[in-house]
Image 1: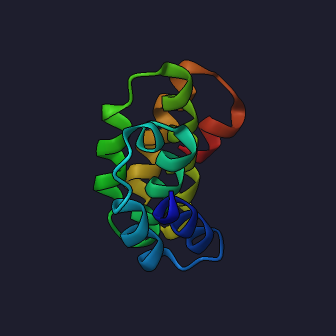
Image 2: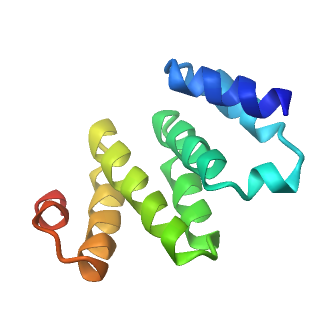
Length: 107
């Protein structure tokens, strides 16, 4: 629990390298399956220029509702970091599931 709290705190204060390290030390499967944990880990991967790892986490998601949320994080954070390939990929999937104009514009 300490690594989970520490990692989330670091990530929320934009200390993404240290946050990634702390979050990867979380061993409890219950915490690892929480969408909050996964979203923060994905954000850390993207901010640390490891977007492919973030994408792999999305591909491993089993819950459709959670994978949609994860795609939103990937799309927006990848766009913010200038990783437009993954942003376009994520926005494209989001747009095919939910035809919102924002997803089309992001793509």
